[in-house]
Structure formats: structure tokens, C-alpha cells
Amino acid sequence: MEQNQIILQGIGLETLIDRFREVVQLELKSLPIKEDLPSIGGLDHARKITGLSKASLYRFTSEGTIPYHKKGGKLFFKTDELLKWIESGNNVEEVNS
Image (tube, rainbow, N blue to C red; front, side):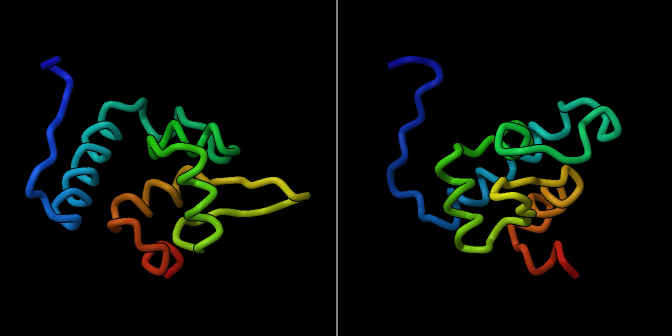
């Protein structure tokens, strides 16, 4: 078995989500200082910050579970909103309050 392989057996969805959140928060700490990140960007920007796939980002935007903005048919994501969304446990209501 490869060193990077993870076997998921007997792990509940909530535990998996919590673990994912922990890993993302650790990755965020290794990013450059927030001021070095662009304040807004498109899908690739959101992918770099969240680590999510384009398909997941599209799904979350259609569900309204991730903070986003749409202009001219294009999606835009603000860095500070995405970081707050991750820190809040991916709860878009907490980001907008």
C-alpha cells in the first residue's frame, strides 16, 4: 500500500467532514499572508483557497452553500468570504451575518 493512501472504513460522514475541515485549516495556515492573496477571483482562485474541485464549487454555488458573486454570467469569489466560510464550518449563513 502506498504511503499516501487512506482507507476509510467505519468512518461516519460527520467525522469525515470534520477531518476535511481540519486539513483545510492546516493548509490555510501554510498559505501566504492573507494580504498576499488576491481579494477576488474566479473558479481557479476559489479552488486554490478551498481545495475543492470545480464540480464541487459549481454544486455549492447552485445550492447556495458557498459565498459567491455572479457578474456577466461569471462566478467570482472573495478571499475573505471563502476563508470565513471555511472557518465557520462551511456555513454560508454565518459568513453573511
